[in-house]
Amino acid sequence: MKIFISGVSSGIGLALAKKYLDQGADVYGLSRRPCPDSRVKWICCDLKDLDSIKGSLNELLSHNANIDLAILNAGVLGTIQDLSAAKLEELKAMIDINLWANKELIDYICGERTCSQVITLSSGAAVNGNRGWSGYSLSKAALNMMTSLYSKEFQNTHFCAFAPGLVDTAMQDQLCSITETDNFTSLQRIQNARGTENMPTADELADKLPNIFKKLLEYTSGSFIDIRKMN
Image (cartoon, rainbow, N blue to C red; front, top):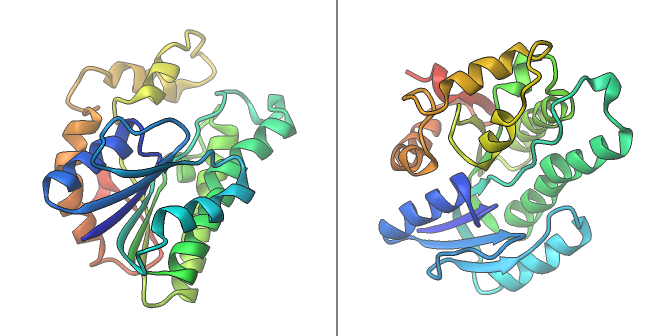
């Protein structure tokens, strides 16, 4: 089995890479920082440099026509702030990484190669519309729609935008460092969940995800699925 993972240097991406490697899969990954697991066939790629993505993928996957599963995990949170306070340049940079970089990845993986299943890592923020999530919510909502659109174009590939729920990664370091939460009430819930069973570590989540990803194939291609609402 051949697995492709973006954002493979830490967090969910790294935890998933290790899990699939332990199961005997070949794992290919790209990330801005080096992947600490030498078993991953890795290449450096900064996704904010959109023009570099195709060349990086050509180098990484030059000998592989087929990918069984692509997990498009890489993304950035940005600043928790009111949308009216967000600078347009910051929003554009976030959308480049969270949306357009994934377009480049999908165009290559499903257009110039073949891929059986594509999972884009989304978030409950894509649909909740909670105050403060501004550019992150916008980018993930757009990612959900892009995933749906691609499911109509590449009908031999199963697509799903998947929200993994609360996970204790470096993103939580950023969220839990915010002290002014009066205007952003969703942050209080997240901060209270850290250290509880409601916020597993990336490794704990990765133990469950391979089976969950197989179950996603039972849903209509292009769906948005939140792990917290699965049966």
